Length: 278
Image (cartoon, rainbow, N blue to C red; front, side, top):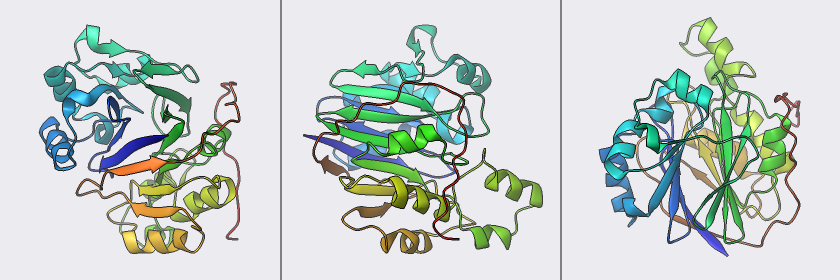
């Protein structure tokens, strides 16, 4: 039981995550150019013809700016909600557009992709679980606060890309204007190192082998600081920083199958207050 995963880029300059089973793969978001995506996959020994679909989390440019060229060149279906498509203004061939709905799994060969709602300042934002071969991978970025949907799905992951966007002191004392600081800190903004660590400590399953700290801010965080916050609580989970400048290594995620059923209710996301750090 295993899956292969990599971050091709993670940050406000572009987001793209690879998840595959050795035969077929999906990309979650396509926020870097087609050329750069191909280049980085080649460096990891991966081929674009293994990618069978792209799933879009929301319409912000750092998640979609490569999608038109990637979909066109490689004839890839683009899974996106109608609202996200409308607000993205993407020009993708109509036959290549596929819609998904929360908690309705999409089967891509031997992979199953499940979307669920999250809190973020976008029209219809979703995060994803990608499962196959008894392994579940989560992509949890661009989240303002951990709603119950995020918590319930995080508990299932053998590995996860989890946003750790900013350090609270760095943001408070940094150069950003107050309106932008408020947007980042709001429940529709981004997760801080502390918020992400609380989610991991409280709800990370014992079988989680890898946690990829993702979407780190260039100005309000740094890899060493983020890693320190998580390292003392990591236990047997490997903590990896997903870079905003280059691809990660290709990781082979192995483990035991998760058995607890997913909750099917699709209520509007509500933030859940978690406080371990005072």
